[in-house]
Image (cartoon, rainbow, N blue to C red):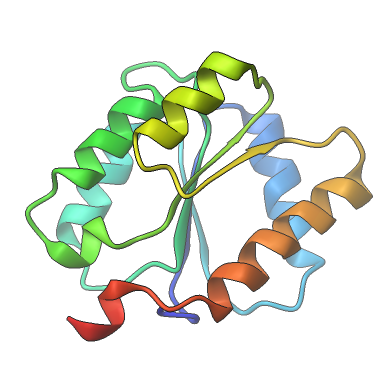
Length: 141
């Protein structure tokens, strides 16, 4: 796992982007946080960068490409290093069908955006701490 790699956030809502950005400012990580407001821009970045991101946090309901479509693009990407980036949903809505579909499509985590800033911060910290400790196949490429 590239613990110092950027964290990719695919989120079209500007308020949520701001909240995520403020959350990272209040956490002890030096990772660059890169925001993309749609999946097409995120895939262009992943296809052209030599950087190995730590993880991808993605909303589900977005224009152009939804979170599932973006995940499929990442999974089918020709570069193995891109395929090995942990892909997690971080979204406002959760129901049984969405969660089942997510895990059936190899999503590595499904998180509902908390309402309070403290819970939001705790959730982001839990996610990042876990993936900073986890070993991924990308370490052996």
